[in-house]
Length: 351
Image (cartoon, rainbow, N blue to C red):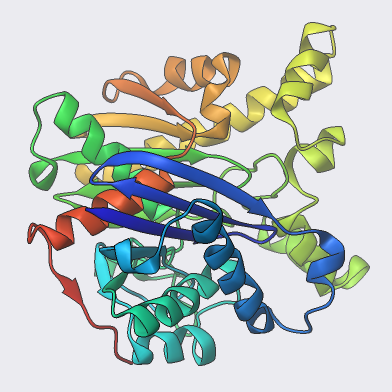
């Protein structure tokens, strides 16, 4: 089975070919900032992203007629469940005209749909960013009009949870697992019986390399008064976290600073580990502490210093396992494979 994977990011489009579950070709096609400036809106990039995928296929001598299924990263759609949705005209209309938030990942379904229609190939999204399976208790915030939102690294975190269960003889559909994705943004979730029943999103939890995470509400009010709403947005998106404290978004540079005796750098880095650990502890009470495993994934889980601090604080709750890096491309391929084999079913997204 030949599977085409499409995974758009803000400054690149990652494209891959899998045969069954075996990776054959992966390419991360970068987009220059000057090129991006030419497009007034996000969706104006659709044709450019589509050409990137066709050029990838041409360069690797792959005809669209050879493709059995297309799987795209799911974007910031209205709330969806875990698993697959059919990419059809209705889903694309929702992604374009009714997204929960603008994000480059929204383009994936639009590109996949064009290739799908022209070549009569089934196409799906899988584990979209907006997977929302929060329980009624976990959804409430302190303001009735603004309930908690469910945005997390669902694709990568579900993939590592399923992998852990397979490796350790557990039934994923009968397990309780906490997963922390440690990347440019940090999100955590608790997966019970295959569903993400509660999450800690990147704006309500630990600070990361360049995101502020949770900021006390009165501090937010002061930031808006003194610096404006755009400044608050930037702290949450790009200039918070390690950037704000230490002037770098590279955890490896922070570790070099620590190795050179910088006590402030150590203090900040350990505070990040402390906040991650505290968020893991908070999620553990969702299941009264009955947790089968705690998994750390994402780019920063390569850091032994950071993960050792976390393990020291949370290992009393459950076994801790590291899955450094991200596995989005393989997770998308595996989702498409299971659908085509009849092991999972894809729904149709309707408003």
